[in-house]
Length: 97
Length: 200
Image (tube, rainbow over all chains, first blue to last red; front, side):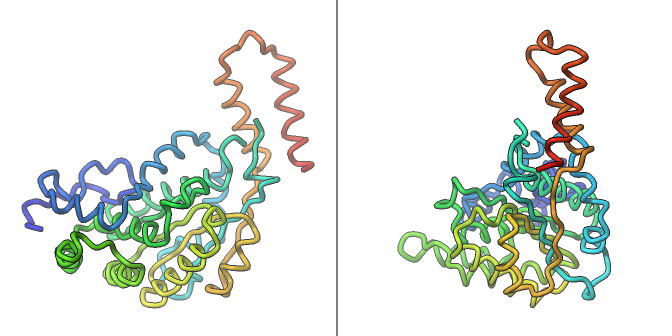
């Protein structure tokens, strides 16, 4: 990709919806074909839907747990790389309609 | 809750990681597994989606462009195979100081896909120890996870009383028929439902 095609503004994580601009420019038709070739799935769309339905504050405690903070942490190596958050259909995952 | 708390947690964690990553050379990528999309969500497509997110974020590497051009010439466009994707993912992720990979609702993927996913993730983490992996799912999936990551850390996700109250308040404020509600009914809802849930 020619470098003049590239524009980097702010956070370019594809999950982060504040990032409108990414590395693949509008004019890079082949680039878009390649992305489609890599996968037809678009998890960021699902992410948008899920976050739109989220209730403010619910589940925030998770981000404060020692396990989560340690896992997210900056230090390399010594931390176990995998964090598994589990819920039972009978408890967290089902419905309080 | 109408939206499962684990899926809500996944999106919360992803947003939190993205906020932390702001301005840093950190990638946050992932897939929400969906029982209803099993056919489309092959292992190749799911890992391909991770690769796609990395490429969207950091630009398409030359070797990926070359592979695409080569594949285009074969049989009028050959699809990617799982080992190709895993190799590309390993290359991409090792070039990053830190990458977070998230898979929501692993149990909604068929067992064969889960096994392939976990194998691939194990391989990725082996070559790139700076990668962190966030998984959610029903408790029994842990048995499968520890086969690949014997020390995987577990956190149970259950709604706290505060979660239930926030949720109820939101639902009550969204009520399309507010006339049907009075102070006493509201107070009863806010008192009784959290009690009943904590008894479950």
